[in-house]
Length: 145
View 1 (cartoon, rainbow, N blue to C red):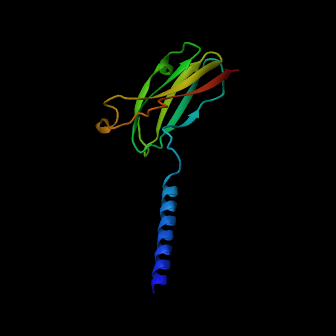
View 2: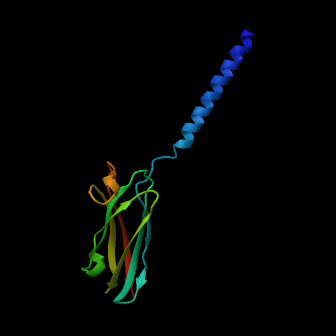
View 3: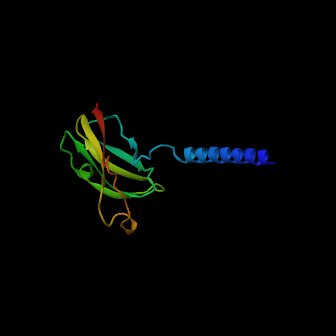
């Protein structure tokens, strides 16, 4: 009888260990990414044509983030191009920002997203700022025909 209980205990211990390792591995899919970009920009336009830049942002963080988005260009362009847009980004609610502006000539520009610490944006002022990686930049060129 003693041999049976030792075998049973060893098998139980092995099963618990396997289950524990399996659960831990299943819960850890790697680090969560603070921002996921989906940028829609036309690659060409006619001279002085109005184009729309659409930036859809998502997060894999469980907590919300306060984000500021804006465009920076090699040409001085006014209107909505110069707007700084601020919003609250949460994992269950993707956010899309739009800029409409005229393209006088071929333009190189950057879309900048800063994760900031600012009150009055997210509900109850509950938001996080990553220790590293609080600025994200993507570059794009619109060629004029």
